[in-house]
Amino acid sequence: MSTPSKFSVGLTGGIGSGKSTVADLFAAHGAAIIDTDLIAHQLSAQGGVAIDALRHAFGAQFITPQGALDRDRMRALVFADPGARQRLEAILHPLIKSETERQAERTDSEYTLFVVPLLLASSYWKQRTARILVVDCDEETQIARVMQRNQLSVEQVKAIIAAQASREERLQAADDIIENNGDAAALLPQVERLHALYSKLAK
Image 1 (cartoon, one colour):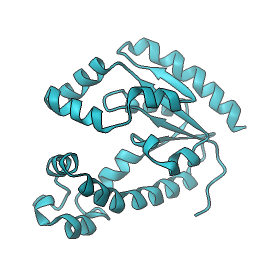
Image 2 (cartoon, rainbow, N blue to C red; image 1 turned 60 degrees about the vertical axis):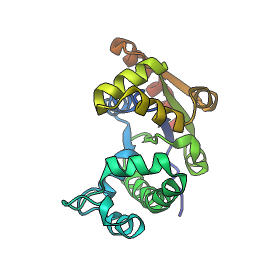
Image 3 (tube, rainbow, N blue to C red; image 1 turned 90 degrees about the horizontal axis):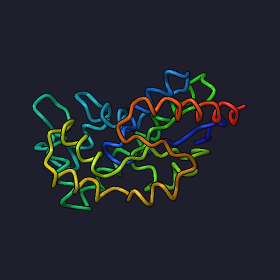
Image 4 (cartoon, rainbow, N blue to C red; image 1 turned 120 degrees about the vertical axis):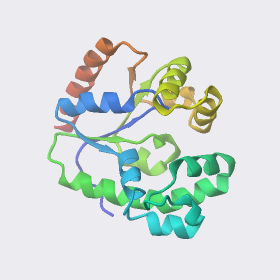
C-alpha cells in the first residue's frame, strides 16, 4: 500500500492520559483526526466488519446477543492470555490500517493526527508518522481518571497500565510532549504551539 505524502503525527499516551481531549483541541485548530480506537470499536460493533472473524476465532460467547463484541469478556481474556491478544490483534490490526489509510486519503487538512494508543508497539506506526506526540500525566492521575470513567478497580487499572508501554518508554520515544495533569487551561497553549509547528512542517 502506498503511503500518502501528507505530513502526519502519531498521538499516543497511556490509558487515562487525555488523548481524546488533546485530539479534540487539535481538531478545533483544523487538524484531521483519525482515531484507531474509534475505528476498532466500529469494526467490532453490531454489524461491524470484524464480527464474523471474531466469532470464528473466539466463539459465539464473545459476541453479545445484539451482535457486537463483548468487550468486557474480551478484555478479561486478553489480559489473562497473551495468545488471545495476538489472535485479536491479527484480526483487527490489518482492518484498522486499511480504514485509517482510507480516511487519510480523504482528508484535506494541513496535517493528519493519528491517535494510536499502542503506537510504540508497532513499527508500522513509527514509520508511518513523521513525529510522535505523547500526552503525559502522572500515574495517580491516570488511575483516578480511568476508575471514574470506566468504573474499574485500582487493581484493574494498574493491570492495564502494566500491559502498556511504560511512561519512561513513551517519553523517550516522543518528539513532542503535552503535559496533562488536570489543568485544562494549561493544555491550550501547548496545543497551539505544536499546531503552529506542525503547520510549518507540513508546508
